[in-house]
Image 1: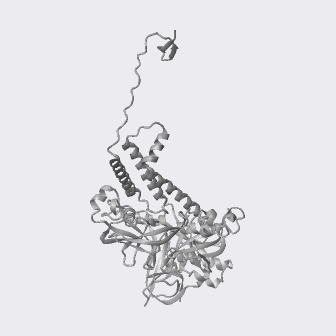
Image 2 (image 1 turned 60 degrees about the vertical axis):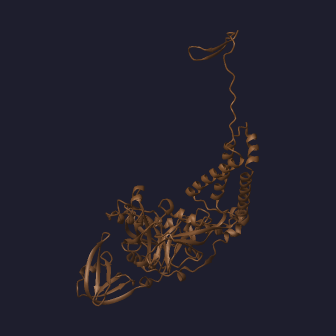
Image 3 (image 1 turned 90 degrees about the vertical axis):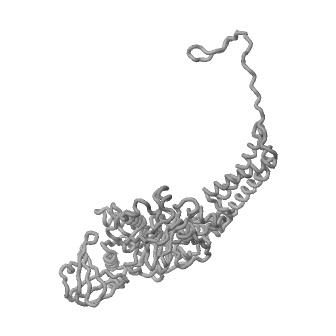
Length: 574
């Protein structure tokens, strides 16, 4: 006699058999599901569901319809999976085990399964064809590089053309400007792009606005965004450019006016880099959408082939293989650095990049922009693959044409230069912006703005690339430059008389003299009789300035420029 049951403690026990017949019922057999309609109807339903899912996915994810896009493979495989799932559902198939499902799919979904297998095979072959293991030399040739002479080819830039702001400072100024406008501050915010361009011969950053939330978008979208910001990188002036016709296409818009969706539906086969906003010489905002191509295999050797230019006001677009001269941002800094890294790693072959590592170089961690002529050039340092904390040269690349020049110059890395500048002012606890590379006195020179804890620019610093112990600072760029040239002369790097190179001298009687406190220092502004410009001189540099008055005869040495206020190097009474 066996027993089975559960005691009062909840434990199960076995061994008791009452001898009574079992009361359990046999399990019911599941009724097989009936197929939906006939074969043709089922195929049409499967296709309709697949197309609906595909349209929703395409509308939201915007994959390029191109074999060179990894997103395209995900898109097609998803469609195949959706069709197969619908086929199982609509057929009422109730087979047991994976084997029966596989048999069913082979019979009923042969075409999507074959398409998926072929697509995966194409992706595999394309990836192998573009592998750096087999195509190292092709990767190394993506960026044509010429050797250059920095002192000869890079002109000395006038101090009133030197960008004094980094991106973070420009963003702060832009947000502050928008906060001052009562009619906009509660409705709009600034898109976090701040593209650096040359606009009317000035280095500036431009940024468009965005609606603060969906409600603001619903109530304002009819008129579009009313303005964009222009931040002068030299004067730090922020201008809100109001438009008679609002901006209707941005990266922060919704639905059909979203820029990504707008260009995808017009150019479904194009691969795009990140769009950037620029302004043409007439002040019309455009989105520059560089077209990406893969030059090695299916997925390797990313490069740019022209761009789609989208009018931000009207949405009109045009694909240009040769972009207009006013376009500055065609090749992104990240792409340029990637292509140089391919050159630095593989120009002596793939195996050398791993074992011998002869002449293997890479770009440094950061980059900055240099305005030369009508174009913007990307600057980045070049170092060896070791951890020696020094550069062996630097690279300048035109962002519109991809013209690239390599300048051999052993010296400090950008971050070492930043540390040197911060150490010079360590009592003030200022932080340095990422350096800008300048030609000062024929010497490659790191230029940095020094910011306080509030991200406001307080001083400027120059550090010699080759001898980074030579550090000069100043309250103004002109003062910093003059101190730097003097230090170069004192250290025998240049002729001492060169500290006055690039300056001019004017003499005359003072017609007007004014003073102002600029960043904690008293600065005098002097105008001579018969002259339209003011000459600025800091009391910290020229104590004599406090003794001057109208009518005094003076001799002023200054840096020439196009501004109405010119920086004086020295002032002497006659």
